[in-house]
Length: 182
Image (cartoon, rainbow, N blue to C red; front, side):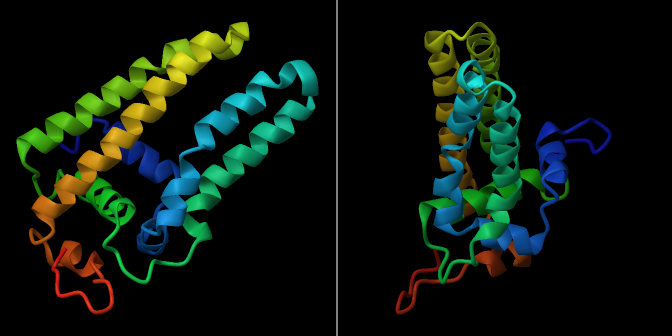
């Protein structure tokens, strides 16, 4: 993949100002599992404009603040043999695919799942605008479901690529007493 083309994945990483320390903390399963409800909470915050009026802006701001704080809020995990850690590491490998190429099937799946997630954006927005819970939930299902599937695929990517670069290998910390390399 050429560095000259805009990479939306790298754009989101830059927006979140992720550094090595933030990524290490984000590998904590608590970070991943408390991130899953962010979009539903944002949806509720926006949908609640009917009840909250201008206080909706405070609710939205709090969700957006948590979105940025979340990868930094938890300590790095004691070990990285969880589904969440492997998914986080795989996402880093995916983001680095211009420097260290990844197998084409992983690239296709990552891009396809991002596209599937993007398909949820219009119905989600319409549901928020029209206060239509059906469209909102349909959009959320696509957005969140595809993102979870993406994280799962990124775990597979990390398992396939963990020895491709010494930095990738160094991210792994085995469970105490475990002899497993992954």
